[in-house]
Length: 143
Image 1 (tube, rainbow, N blue to C red):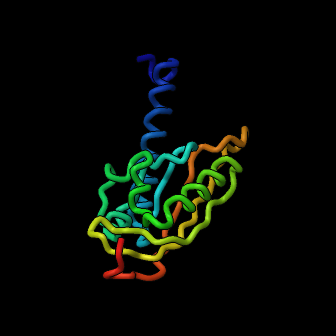
Image 2 (cartoon, rainbow, N blue to C red):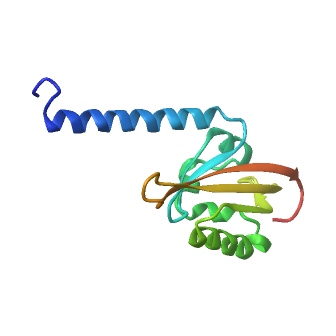
């Protein structure tokens, strides 16, 4: 209201830049041909890219929060969840290979890496950025 000099104008401008950065980040991630994801500091999924949906058949809503756990093969789930919990607790990179199930029930062997993204000054983990490499499709394998 004051020609851009009021506190309101400065907050609004900052919010718009933040939204623009988030939108650009989402767009950029969707351009990648490898499935990738973003999790909150506590490990809850907040975003998957278009390649993730194409490769695994799950919508973004189906993977939100802890729902992504459903894609881990039943025989691998406990191990992977323990590895993920330790990575979060220790604030270190997560790296694991396991069997993942597509929405259609196809089993794929995958290698997953998720890296913590710390705040530049406080060091607090802001989020985790991860990628999935499909190592081998085990079509027809029991899920």
